[in-house]
Length: 391
Ligand SMILES: [Zn+2]
Image (cartoon, rainbow, N blue to C red; front, top):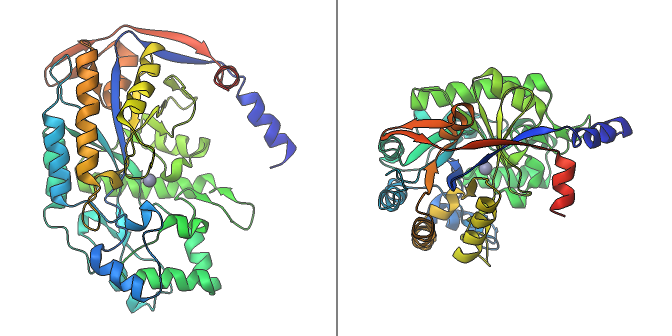
Protein backbone atom coordinates (compact mmCIF):
# COMPACT_ATOMS: atom_id res chain seq x y z
CA UNK A 1 0.00 0.00 0.00
CA UNK A 2 1.45 3.39 -0.90
CA UNK A 3 1.91 6.21 1.62
CA UNK A 4 -0.87 8.42 0.24
CA UNK A 5 -3.37 5.55 0.54
CA UNK A 6 -2.26 4.78 4.12
CA UNK A 7 -2.68 8.44 5.09
CA UNK A 8 -6.09 8.56 3.45
CA UNK A 9 -7.22 5.47 5.39
CA UNK A 10 -5.96 7.00 8.64
CA UNK A 11 -7.76 10.30 7.93
CA UNK A 12 -10.94 8.46 7.10
CA UNK A 13 -10.97 7.01 10.61
CA UNK A 14 -11.13 10.58 11.95
CA UNK A 15 -14.32 11.49 10.04
CA UNK A 16 -17.30 11.88 12.33
CA UNK A 17 -20.30 9.63 11.68
CA UNK A 18 -23.75 9.82 13.25
CA UNK A 19 -24.31 6.50 15.02
CA UNK A 20 -27.83 5.31 15.83
CA UNK A 21 -28.75 4.08 19.31
CA UNK A 22 -32.01 2.56 20.50
CA UNK A 23 -33.89 2.39 23.82
CA UNK A 24 -35.10 -1.20 23.34
CA UNK A 25 -33.11 -4.42 22.87
CA UNK A 26 -33.08 -5.21 19.13
CA UNK A 27 -31.98 -8.56 17.71
CA UNK A 28 -31.15 -9.29 14.06
CA UNK A 29 -29.99 -12.62 12.64
CA UNK A 30 -27.74 -12.45 9.57
CA UNK A 31 -26.75 -15.66 7.81
CA UNK A 32 -24.45 -16.11 4.80
CA UNK A 33 -23.90 -18.68 2.05
CA UNK A 34 -27.45 -19.95 1.39
CA UNK A 35 -27.69 -21.64 -2.00
CA UNK A 36 -23.95 -22.21 -2.29
CA UNK A 37 -23.04 -25.81 -3.04
CA UNK A 38 -19.92 -27.30 -1.42
CA UNK A 39 -18.95 -30.92 -0.89
CA UNK A 40 -21.35 -33.11 -2.93
CA UNK A 41 -22.58 -35.06 0.09
CA UNK A 42 -21.28 -38.57 0.93
CA UNK A 43 -20.75 -39.44 -2.73
CA UNK A 44 -18.59 -36.38 -3.32
CA UNK A 45 -16.68 -37.08 -0.09
CA UNK A 46 -15.81 -40.61 -1.23
CA UNK A 47 -14.86 -39.44 -4.70
CA UNK A 48 -12.48 -36.82 -3.29
CA UNK A 49 -11.03 -39.29 -0.79
CA UNK A 50 -10.22 -41.70 -3.57
CA UNK A 51 -8.59 -38.81 -5.46
CA UNK A 52 -6.25 -38.46 -2.44
CA UNK A 53 -7.80 -35.57 -0.48
CA UNK A 54 -7.92 -36.01 3.30
CA UNK A 55 -11.20 -34.39 4.25
CA UNK A 56 -12.43 -33.53 7.74
CA UNK A 57 -9.42 -31.51 8.87
CA UNK A 58 -11.55 -28.37 9.22
CA UNK A 59 -15.33 -27.88 9.48
CA UNK A 60 -15.54 -26.33 6.00
CA UNK A 61 -14.29 -29.62 4.48
CA UNK A 62 -17.74 -30.94 5.35
CA UNK A 63 -19.72 -27.90 4.18
CA UNK A 64 -22.32 -29.38 1.79
CA UNK A 65 -25.59 -27.57 1.01
CA UNK A 66 -28.77 -27.22 3.05
CA UNK A 67 -31.69 -29.51 2.26
CA UNK A 68 -35.40 -28.64 2.27
CA UNK A 69 -35.58 -30.48 5.65
CA UNK A 70 -32.75 -28.36 7.10
CA UNK A 71 -34.56 -25.20 6.05
CA UNK A 72 -37.92 -26.44 7.40
CA UNK A 73 -36.36 -27.45 10.74
CA UNK A 74 -34.90 -23.94 11.15
CA UNK A 75 -38.26 -22.42 10.26
CA UNK A 76 -39.97 -24.59 12.91
CA UNK A 77 -37.63 -23.39 15.66
CA UNK A 78 -38.10 -19.74 14.68
CA UNK A 79 -41.88 -20.13 14.71
CA UNK A 80 -41.75 -21.29 18.34
CA UNK A 81 -40.40 -17.88 19.40
CA UNK A 82 -41.92 -14.40 19.54
CA UNK A 83 -40.76 -10.94 20.59
CA UNK A 84 -42.67 -8.37 22.66
CA UNK A 85 -44.67 -7.27 19.61
CA UNK A 86 -45.63 -10.83 18.67
CA UNK A 87 -43.07 -11.27 15.87
CA UNK A 88 -41.06 -14.37 15.18
CA UNK A 89 -37.29 -14.03 14.92
CA UNK A 90 -36.29 -13.64 11.27
CA UNK A 91 -33.15 -15.16 9.75
CA UNK A 92 -31.85 -12.95 7.03
CA UNK A 93 -30.46 -15.34 4.43
CA UNK A 94 -27.72 -13.94 2.23
CA UNK A 95 -27.83 -15.89 -1.02
CA UNK A 96 -25.16 -17.00 -3.46
CA UNK A 97 -27.21 -16.94 -6.65
CA UNK A 98 -25.27 -19.32 -8.90
CA UNK A 99 -23.22 -22.47 -8.74
CA UNK A 100 -20.77 -23.91 -11.24
CA UNK A 101 -22.23 -25.65 -14.26
CA UNK A 102 -20.10 -28.79 -14.12
CA UNK A 103 -21.83 -30.38 -17.14
CA UNK A 104 -20.86 -27.48 -19.40
CA UNK A 105 -17.45 -27.17 -17.81
CA UNK A 106 -16.54 -30.83 -18.33
CA UNK A 107 -17.71 -30.62 -21.97
CA UNK A 108 -15.16 -27.81 -22.17
CA UNK A 109 -12.49 -30.00 -20.56
CA UNK A 110 -12.62 -27.79 -17.42
CA UNK A 111 -10.79 -24.98 -19.19
CA UNK A 112 -13.13 -22.18 -18.13
CA UNK A 113 -15.92 -21.36 -15.71
CA UNK A 114 -19.61 -21.58 -16.55
CA UNK A 115 -22.12 -20.54 -13.94
CA UNK A 116 -25.57 -22.01 -13.40
CA UNK A 117 -28.11 -19.65 -11.80
CA UNK A 118 -29.77 -21.11 -8.70
CA UNK A 119 -33.18 -20.37 -10.21
CA UNK A 120 -32.35 -22.86 -13.01
CA UNK A 121 -31.43 -25.61 -10.56
CA UNK A 122 -28.32 -27.23 -9.15
CA UNK A 123 -25.25 -28.60 -10.96
CA UNK A 124 -25.04 -32.11 -12.35
CA UNK A 125 -24.87 -34.73 -9.61
CA UNK A 126 -26.66 -32.59 -7.04
CA UNK A 127 -30.15 -33.26 -5.75
CA UNK A 128 -32.14 -31.06 -3.34
CA UNK A 129 -35.85 -31.67 -3.89
CA UNK A 130 -38.09 -28.88 -2.61
CA UNK A 131 -35.24 -26.60 -1.54
CA UNK A 132 -36.29 -23.45 -3.41
CA UNK A 133 -39.88 -23.95 -2.25
CA UNK A 134 -38.66 -24.31 1.36
CA UNK A 135 -36.84 -20.95 1.15
CA UNK A 136 -39.93 -19.31 -0.33
CA UNK A 137 -42.24 -20.78 2.28
CA UNK A 138 -40.12 -19.43 5.15
CA UNK A 139 -40.03 -16.02 3.46
CA UNK A 140 -43.83 -16.02 3.10
CA UNK A 141 -44.13 -17.01 6.79
CA UNK A 142 -41.91 -14.08 7.82
CA UNK A 143 -39.19 -16.21 9.42
CA UNK A 144 -36.69 -15.75 6.55
CA UNK A 145 -35.76 -12.62 4.67
CA UNK A 146 -33.67 -12.94 1.49
CA UNK A 147 -30.66 -10.69 0.93
CA UNK A 148 -27.72 -10.51 -1.44
CA UNK A 149 -24.39 -12.27 -0.95
CA UNK A 150 -23.17 -12.62 -4.54
CA UNK A 151 -23.26 -14.59 -7.78
CA UNK A 152 -20.20 -16.67 -6.95
CA UNK A 153 -18.45 -16.57 -3.60
CA UNK A 154 -14.97 -16.69 -5.16
CA UNK A 155 -13.26 -14.24 -7.51
CA UNK A 156 -13.84 -15.52 -11.03
CA UNK A 157 -10.77 -13.81 -12.52
CA UNK A 158 -8.52 -15.31 -9.81
CA UNK A 159 -9.81 -18.81 -10.55
CA UNK A 160 -9.50 -18.39 -14.32
CA UNK A 161 -5.99 -17.01 -14.07
CA UNK A 162 -4.84 -19.96 -11.95
CA UNK A 163 -6.61 -22.38 -14.27
CA UNK A 164 -4.83 -20.94 -17.33
CA UNK A 165 -1.48 -21.10 -15.53
CA UNK A 166 -1.75 -24.86 -14.88
CA UNK A 167 0.20 -26.68 -12.16
CA UNK A 168 -0.94 -27.86 -8.72
CA UNK A 169 -3.57 -25.17 -8.24
CA UNK A 170 -5.30 -25.92 -11.55
CA UNK A 171 -5.11 -29.64 -10.77
CA UNK A 172 -6.75 -29.13 -7.36
CA UNK A 173 -9.58 -27.13 -8.97
CA UNK A 174 -10.19 -29.86 -11.57
CA UNK A 175 -10.12 -32.63 -8.95
CA UNK A 176 -12.81 -30.82 -6.95
CA UNK A 177 -14.87 -29.99 -10.04
CA UNK A 178 -14.83 -33.63 -11.25
CA UNK A 179 -16.38 -34.50 -7.86
CA UNK A 180 -19.06 -31.79 -8.21
CA UNK A 181 -17.50 -29.46 -5.60
CA UNK A 182 -16.78 -25.85 -6.66
CA UNK A 183 -14.00 -25.20 -4.11
CA UNK A 184 -12.97 -25.51 -0.45
CA UNK A 185 -11.75 -22.04 0.42
CA UNK A 186 -9.29 -22.74 3.23
CA UNK A 187 -7.41 -25.17 0.97
CA UNK A 188 -7.09 -22.56 -1.77
CA UNK A 189 -7.34 -18.99 -0.40
CA UNK A 190 -5.84 -17.74 -3.70
CA UNK A 191 -9.36 -17.97 -5.22
CA UNK A 192 -10.21 -14.84 -3.21
CA UNK A 193 -13.74 -13.50 -2.86
CA UNK A 194 -16.13 -12.22 -5.49
CA UNK A 195 -15.01 -8.55 -5.40
CA UNK A 196 -11.49 -9.19 -4.10
CA UNK A 197 -8.56 -10.85 -5.87
CA UNK A 198 -5.63 -11.48 -3.48
CA UNK A 199 -3.05 -11.86 -6.26
CA UNK A 200 -4.25 -9.68 -9.08
CA UNK A 201 -1.23 -8.72 -11.22
CA UNK A 202 -1.65 -4.94 -10.77
CA UNK A 203 -1.64 -5.43 -6.96
CA UNK A 204 -3.87 -7.70 -4.87
CA UNK A 205 -7.09 -6.31 -3.49
CA UNK A 206 -10.51 -5.07 -4.52
CA UNK A 207 -11.53 -5.38 -8.16
CA UNK A 208 -11.88 -2.19 -10.22
CA UNK A 209 -15.11 -0.22 -9.71
CA UNK A 210 -16.50 -1.01 -13.18
CA UNK A 211 -15.92 -4.77 -12.73
CA UNK A 212 -17.67 -4.71 -9.36
CA UNK A 213 -20.58 -2.75 -10.84
CA UNK A 214 -20.97 -5.36 -13.58
CA UNK A 215 -20.81 -8.28 -11.10
CA UNK A 216 -23.35 -6.65 -8.78
CA UNK A 217 -25.63 -5.98 -11.74
CA UNK A 218 -25.56 -9.73 -12.58
CA UNK A 219 -26.16 -10.73 -8.95
CA UNK A 220 -29.11 -8.36 -8.55
CA UNK A 221 -30.62 -9.72 -11.79
CA UNK A 222 -30.25 -13.31 -10.55
CA UNK A 223 -31.75 -12.35 -7.18
CA UNK A 224 -34.74 -10.73 -8.89
CA UNK A 225 -35.42 -13.80 -11.02
CA UNK A 226 -35.30 -16.08 -7.97
CA UNK A 227 -37.34 -13.97 -5.52
CA UNK A 228 -39.35 -11.63 -7.80
CA UNK A 229 -38.10 -8.66 -5.77
CA UNK A 230 -34.94 -6.56 -5.48
CA UNK A 231 -32.48 -6.98 -2.59
CA UNK A 232 -32.50 -4.28 0.11
CA UNK A 233 -29.50 -5.57 2.02
CA UNK A 234 -26.16 -7.06 0.96
CA UNK A 235 -23.08 -8.68 2.45
CA UNK A 236 -19.98 -9.08 0.29
CA UNK A 237 -18.45 -12.58 0.18
CA UNK A 238 -15.64 -12.75 2.74
CA UNK A 239 -16.81 -9.27 3.91
CA UNK A 240 -14.49 -7.95 1.17
CA UNK A 241 -16.26 -4.75 0.14
CA UNK A 242 -14.89 -1.26 -0.42
CA UNK A 243 -16.35 2.14 -1.28
CA UNK A 244 -16.83 1.02 -4.93
CA UNK A 245 -18.89 -1.98 -3.74
CA UNK A 246 -21.07 0.26 -1.57
CA UNK A 247 -21.61 2.72 -4.43
CA UNK A 248 -22.57 -0.10 -6.83
CA UNK A 249 -24.99 -1.53 -4.26
CA UNK A 250 -26.55 1.93 -3.75
CA UNK A 251 -26.95 2.28 -7.53
CA UNK A 252 -28.90 -0.99 -7.49
CA UNK A 253 -31.23 0.04 -4.69
CA UNK A 254 -29.45 -1.77 -1.86
CA UNK A 255 -29.90 0.39 1.24
CA UNK A 256 -28.13 -1.72 3.90
CA UNK A 257 -24.53 -2.99 3.90
CA UNK A 258 -23.70 -5.83 6.28
CA UNK A 259 -20.19 -5.85 7.74
CA UNK A 260 -18.32 -8.60 9.54
CA UNK A 261 -17.73 -8.91 13.27
CA UNK A 262 -15.00 -6.94 15.03
CA UNK A 263 -15.54 -3.71 16.93
CA UNK A 264 -18.89 -2.59 18.28
CA UNK A 265 -19.80 -0.01 15.66
CA UNK A 266 -23.26 1.62 15.84
CA UNK A 267 -25.42 1.59 12.69
CA UNK A 268 -24.56 4.62 10.54
CA UNK A 269 -24.95 5.93 6.99
CA UNK A 270 -22.07 6.23 4.52
CA UNK A 271 -21.67 8.91 1.83
CA UNK A 272 -23.77 6.87 -0.61
CA UNK A 273 -26.72 6.84 1.78
CA UNK A 274 -26.20 3.15 2.61
CA UNK A 275 -26.85 2.12 6.21
CA UNK A 276 -23.90 0.12 7.61
CA UNK A 277 -24.49 -2.64 10.13
CA UNK A 278 -21.71 -4.57 11.88
CA UNK A 279 -22.20 -8.03 13.33
CA UNK A 280 -21.74 -8.18 17.08
CA UNK A 281 -22.61 -11.74 18.15
CA UNK A 282 -20.81 -14.76 16.65
CA UNK A 283 -23.21 -17.65 16.84
CA UNK A 284 -21.26 -20.35 14.95
CA UNK A 285 -21.36 -23.66 16.85
CA UNK A 286 -20.33 -25.68 13.77
CA UNK A 287 -17.03 -23.85 13.34
CA UNK A 288 -16.19 -22.56 16.81
CA UNK A 289 -14.81 -25.29 19.08
CA UNK A 290 -15.25 -23.09 22.16
CA UNK A 291 -18.80 -22.02 21.32
CA UNK A 292 -21.17 -21.37 24.21
CA UNK A 293 -24.68 -19.92 24.38
CA UNK A 294 -23.63 -17.94 27.47
CA UNK A 295 -20.80 -16.25 25.59
CA UNK A 296 -23.28 -15.25 22.85
CA UNK A 297 -25.71 -13.91 25.45
CA UNK A 298 -22.85 -11.89 26.94
CA UNK A 299 -22.07 -10.41 23.51
CA UNK A 300 -25.75 -9.49 23.02
CA UNK A 301 -25.95 -7.82 26.47
CA UNK A 302 -22.83 -5.77 25.70
CA UNK A 303 -24.67 -4.36 22.67
CA UNK A 304 -27.88 -3.60 24.59
CA UNK A 305 -25.82 -1.82 27.29
CA UNK A 306 -24.69 0.65 24.62
CA UNK A 307 -28.10 0.96 22.96
CA UNK A 308 -26.87 -0.99 19.94
CA UNK A 309 -28.66 -3.85 18.19
CA UNK A 310 -27.36 -7.37 18.74
CA UNK A 311 -26.56 -8.45 15.17
CA UNK A 312 -26.02 -12.18 15.18
CA UNK A 313 -23.78 -13.88 12.61
CA UNK A 314 -24.75 -17.50 11.91
CA UNK A 315 -23.51 -19.05 8.64
CA UNK A 316 -25.55 -21.64 6.72
CA UNK A 317 -23.02 -24.41 7.54
CA UNK A 318 -24.49 -24.51 11.05
CA UNK A 319 -27.73 -25.91 9.63
CA UNK A 320 -26.24 -28.56 7.28
CA UNK A 321 -26.90 -32.23 7.91
CA UNK A 322 -26.04 -34.50 4.97
CA UNK A 323 -22.47 -35.55 5.78
CA UNK A 324 -22.40 -34.57 9.43
CA UNK A 325 -25.42 -33.48 11.47
CA UNK A 326 -24.45 -29.93 12.37
CA UNK A 327 -28.08 -28.80 12.40
CA UNK A 328 -29.46 -30.50 15.55
CA UNK A 329 -26.91 -28.96 17.90
CA UNK A 330 -27.29 -25.50 16.34
CA UNK A 331 -31.08 -25.57 16.59
CA UNK A 332 -30.94 -26.62 20.22
CA UNK A 333 -28.50 -23.79 21.05
CA UNK A 334 -30.50 -21.30 18.99
CA UNK A 335 -33.67 -22.19 20.90
CA UNK A 336 -31.84 -21.69 24.22
CA UNK A 337 -30.37 -18.39 23.08
CA UNK A 338 -33.70 -16.95 21.93
CA UNK A 339 -35.56 -18.20 25.04
CA UNK A 340 -32.97 -16.59 27.33
CA UNK A 341 -33.27 -13.24 25.51
CA UNK A 342 -37.07 -13.36 25.59
CA UNK A 343 -37.26 -14.17 29.31
CA UNK A 344 -34.75 -11.50 30.29
CA UNK A 345 -36.11 -8.66 28.11
CA UNK A 346 -39.85 -8.02 28.19
CA UNK A 347 -39.41 -5.32 25.52
CA UNK A 348 -37.28 -7.40 23.10
CA UNK A 349 -37.74 -6.88 19.35
CA UNK A 350 -36.73 -9.16 16.45
CA UNK A 351 -36.08 -7.26 13.22
CA UNK A 352 -34.49 -7.72 9.82
CA UNK A 353 -32.32 -5.15 8.04
CA UNK A 354 -35.16 -3.49 6.17
CA UNK A 355 -37.06 -2.96 9.47
CA UNK A 356 -33.96 -1.36 11.01
CA UNK A 357 -33.50 0.90 7.98
CA UNK A 358 -37.09 2.08 8.32
CA UNK A 359 -36.63 2.53 12.07
CA UNK A 360 -33.60 4.85 11.80
CA UNK A 361 -35.43 6.92 9.19
CA UNK A 362 -38.84 7.15 10.85
CA UNK A 363 -38.51 6.15 14.53
CA UNK A 364 -40.85 3.23 13.87
CA UNK A 365 -41.28 0.30 11.49
CA UNK A 366 -44.27 -1.41 10.00
CA UNK A 367 -44.76 -5.12 10.18
CA UNK A 368 -47.56 -7.62 9.74
CA UNK A 369 -48.81 -6.97 13.29
CA UNK A 370 -48.84 -3.14 13.06
CA UNK A 371 -46.39 -0.32 13.75
CA UNK A 372 -43.57 -0.75 16.28
CA UNK A 373 -42.17 2.37 18.00
CA UNK A 374 -38.61 2.66 19.31
CA UNK A 375 -36.78 5.79 20.51
CA UNK A 376 -33.81 6.40 18.23
CA UNK A 377 -31.00 8.77 19.21
CA UNK A 378 -27.99 9.90 17.19
CA UNK A 379 -24.51 10.14 18.70
CA UNK A 380 -21.45 11.26 16.80
CA UNK A 381 -18.45 8.89 16.70
CA UNK A 382 -15.20 8.42 14.83
CA UNK A 383 -13.74 5.03 13.96
CA UNK A 384 -10.43 6.11 15.50
CA UNK A 385 -12.09 6.85 18.86
CA UNK A 386 -13.97 3.53 18.79
CA UNK A 387 -10.71 1.71 18.07
CA UNK A 388 -9.01 3.42 21.01
CA UNK A 389 -11.87 2.79 23.42
CA UNK A 390 -12.22 -0.88 22.46
CA UNK A 391 -8.50 -1.70 22.16
ZN1 LIG B 1 -20.00 -16.16 2.62
